[in-house]
Amino acid sequence: MLDVPARDVGLILATAVAGALLVGVPGAVVLRRLRGRSITVHVCVLLTVTVAAALAGVSAIARAMFISAHDRDVLFLVLAGSGAVSLALGWWLGRRLAADAVWAEQARARERAAEAGRRELVAWVSHDLRTPLAGLRAMAEALEDGVVADEATTREYLRRIRSESDRMAELVDDLFELSRINAGALRLSMATVPLGDVVSDVLASVGPVARAGGVRVVAAEHGWPTVTGSEPELIRIVANLLRNAIRFTPYDGTVQLSGGRDGDAAWLAVADSCGGIPESDLGRVFDVAFRGEPARTPAGPARGGAGGGGLGLAIVRGLVDAHGGRVEVANTGDGCRFVVHLRAA
Image (cartoon, rainbow, N blue to C red; front, top):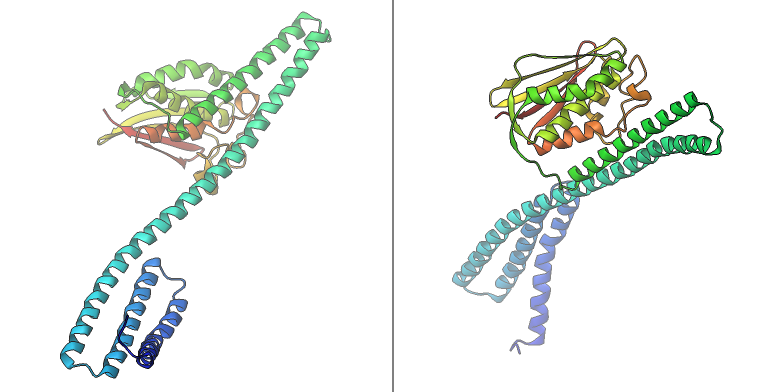
């Protein structure tokens, strides 16, 4: 128990509280005016007000107790040292809290964007699957009920069924690839890969589609670099870019493929004559489910009779990022140009 009279205790508490309020009330006003400032500033001001309030209370009590000058100076020195340490810790903790708050806000923003992207993707996929499934059911019922009897019409129905099945299979394959990328389940088998061989393989598979759409595909004969990457994924990157260029290039248009080396980096470019992309949409072409109808207006219909699923360029960006590279797009004179930067072997 304290051997202090009750009256003195009350006087001491009243004096300490009065001294603390003289500093605390203005400090609260200052904190209110600093509502828009950073967390670090708030923490430092709060600690400054707290230390100053304690110092004011102790100073008032010390004067009332008529303690010696030496003891008073020692007391103030201890409080000043403790206050300096508190302010230093507050500044450091404030910066940590500010960084954590910014990281948390960014994480929430990314989560909201990812959730919005998932909802949009589900809506697009539902639409893309509903249309061909309705057509498949109608043609299958016509064949089953004998509505279609002549051989030519039957063959046409079977061709359409196969074509729609291929479209749905391609969409499901894109969804699976995109899910692997987003889930971090993509495993690359890195090797030394000549880009010229990759381009040749892609041209062999995509060439018939280009010829059917009246699009000329011109690839450079020399200058293709060798890169470090996974060959299946590199083929997917080039194929998606080339198919996208063919889809939006009008009849009798040209798609050009070129490549080269810039220091320690290699690059591959696919240029089309689609008419260009509005500047406001350049940053969206790699978004999931962004088809490009508002951004790219080809002179003719999309190859294959319909637009893509809006996943091809998103897959390109995911695969390029997995390789530690980057992909860019820019408008040219009569179209746009996609450039992929990779690590040279």
